[in-house]
Image 1 (tube, rainbow, N blue to C red):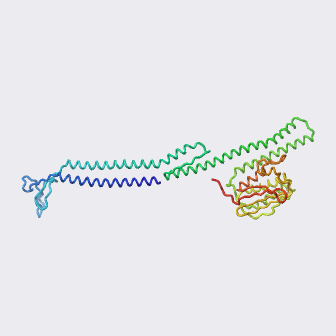
Image 2: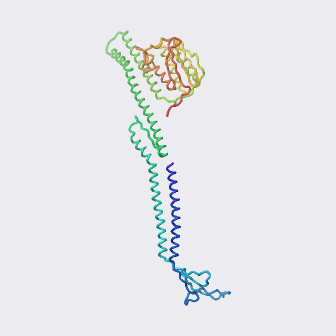
Image 3: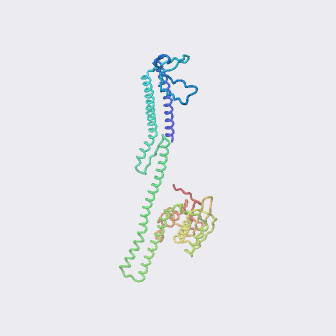
Length: 413
């Protein structure tokens, strides 16, 4: 925009300058031509028209009372434009005879001066346009050269288009685009690395039950076993199948939640969701005392299923791994944050497992679980812009403390 305005101003100044110059030159040339014409003009005194024999006659005077029956024909007499009367001398004529070649040369010179001014104006305008175009194109060339040097997104050089507003706006837009591409590239690399690690760990975790299942099936297929041993082997096969099914279910849930964004969030009432989760846990674990001890009605935005998953997995871990007989659930709101605490009276988590308790497939030796329960809890906390941590419970077991935002802020680009 700035280059266009400057170009328009320069063009206007060039036009005005050329107009003034041409007017001044025409004035000077006209004055000079007039002086030369007057100085070269020949002046001759002609005789009176009535004294010249054979002089052309003018039309006779018209009668006062024209006779309608009489028609008078007056021959046309050309008028000599070189003759001019002299004021104060009636009947005296003066013949003016200028040098016509000189006049025509002066006219031609004026035309050449005008043509020269026009050609000069075009050349000046073209030169100024070339200079301004070079000024505007210089930052664009630098920007193009810097852009051509970008081979990968691993290292993005800063792009600058300083020198013209249009180039600056273009460089800023390209920098923002490159920043978004860099962010997306980093997320993609992180996702691919996580997918590779996830696939490797899944293969490792599934290899053990699949190997045991294959061994048991080979024993059943190749050996005649007593009914008691056969029943024990079949029980191991069913247990391995349940473990594989449970692991695959947790892996599916983990993978689905990895692709969940805040566009799937909805508004719900926290206490009602926690109460439903507690009721479901009671039906799944009827021998365990599970209760919602404290909860303030809090509207929040998130995934109700994710909140219920946190309670379900926490209770399942407390019962199956900690052998708890009592589990309490509580929630409270503080400003824009929500805290959910789940306490149990079980045996707790060994000290050496505490730092990695939220890792995928982290479990005790011989545990029948998939090792993904607490990993799913942490995933849900992070989806709600929160955190999850373990600490000692007043009931004697483990306290799971989950901090979440009441209305997570969308951080997407």
